[in-house]
Length: 433
Ligand SMILES: Cc1ncc(COP(=O)(O)O)c(C=O)c1O
Image (cartoon, rainbow, N blue to C red; front, top):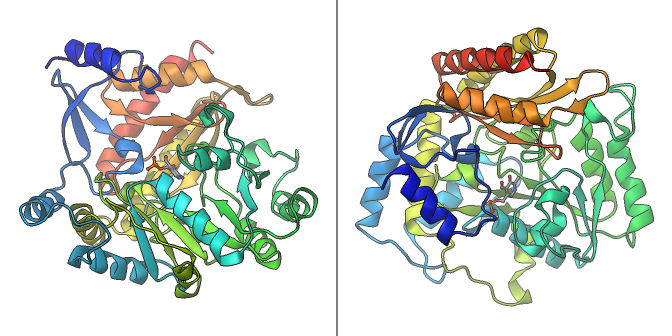
């Protein structure tokens, strides 16, 4: 099918509410490594990786081979029957996750992983109130939209009882109009006030992303999680760390984003980069917490622990270890960050550069003093970069943040090429601001 036929069918048979990137959408045809091609044969350097998902590149040969092998053996089992890939993956995740996290429940998406985490936290604590963060993104179920801290993604009536939203550590637009470090991380301290004034004083959990992904790669200061999690524990809650975007080495140096902040989650959720594009979500926790669900009732997942997805995940983790370990990501990510900071010096449109590893956000403003979000500039940068063969992402509550997150296998050469295209695009777009 050609591009027009695909887009015509999309418009006729898929809900119009599907969000499509670019005024003229790009139907993808195939991929290899860091590149994808559209159906017209145009080649793109993919610096968004299917929303931070293709950890080791498109169609990584090792992943493809392992999936092929498993498909010929057994495609489906359900969680009613143990299977080798399922248990081996659980063992591997217990080895690479921090602290006492050891026992897993697999599902098929980040949304389900978060649903499962909240269910578990409530069962474990016997409480039902949850503290989430403003600007957070948790998925698309009713509960996940209730946890969400961004109006545009909360479709319909999503007021789930018991969820309170604390201020997020958005230093560039501090909700308290303070400056770090003189602020003493007052946003984290305020969680205690939120608990004491808006809940029963007893909570089930605090759910947060180490770096807010869809929120625009908002990166908390060093002390944030130590302060926040200590408060949560004091009020009886557990810390659910949503690593759906930040997991699997994405932030460099460590396997999981939260390891930059010196705290150990009680429950961790993961998806996206876990299996290089096959649908898989996981909720991992400690044996003590998981045990509490045993006598509460029954739970299954039809597609949970799917042998093909688990095989894909096992080989993805191997490939990360071999081709793109967290040290590699720290190195290439450092180069990307330095290049983006150079662009900050050149182009006043860039208000802030933030993130860690290969998860870098660039917030665009029309005026550095007022910090007015430059939404049109994002649209123009998108068109300019696309025309020169670079795909990037966007996000942020104000829709003015570029999200730059290539597969972890990106090299210095890929980064230099992307920075060159961004430089060109900014030079062009800056003129009209
Ligand atoms: C941090 C975070 N949590 C949860 C989700 C939901 O994941 P999924 O789209 O796989 O349901 C997302 C998706 O973008 C996410 O970024």
